[in-house]
Image 1 (cartoon, rainbow, N blue to C red):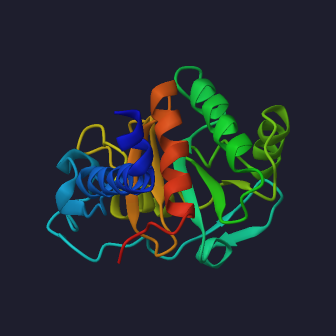
Image 2: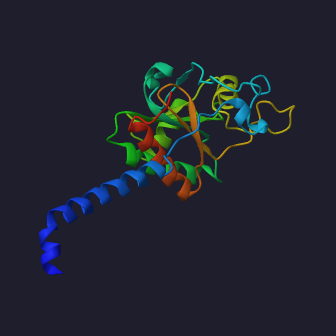
Length: 225
């Protein structure tokens, strides 16, 4: 028996290697490939979307914007052009979900610190309180890296319009209270083509881990057409 095995050792070796390669190819072919959806207003809970865009089922992108950050600099879509970014909505005096969200977004900042493709964008929902100096103090207190993370204030109507028409992320209170926004825990992932690619609960560690994984996925060029 040993002499037979020895005689055919080369053939057996080739067969084993070929079998291993074939099995690996079959496994990779059958294994579900990771994808990220592209969200349009029609795909999202209508409570989170302005009624004027609820019917839009394709080609939705983030609208142009202009706000002021914690350093008094005007921030527009040009500052995020070609970037993957995470957007959220907060206010500095929030004592409920905001502290946890800010802490978790700081973890995302840590994960993307050396990734030039990725940035963060936080909009205050109380711009009448959150002036530039207030945002600057908040940024300093929470370790915000100015090169990666903008905390922005501006016209309240414009902020709220972005929340519901672009980011599809914020519920209203009573219909009569258009600018009395119900705060949201959502982090919104936006790709380099200004498309919404994911929603994540900013208060949950498991969602933050998934967000970081999805950012890496997009950073690796897996955005889809």
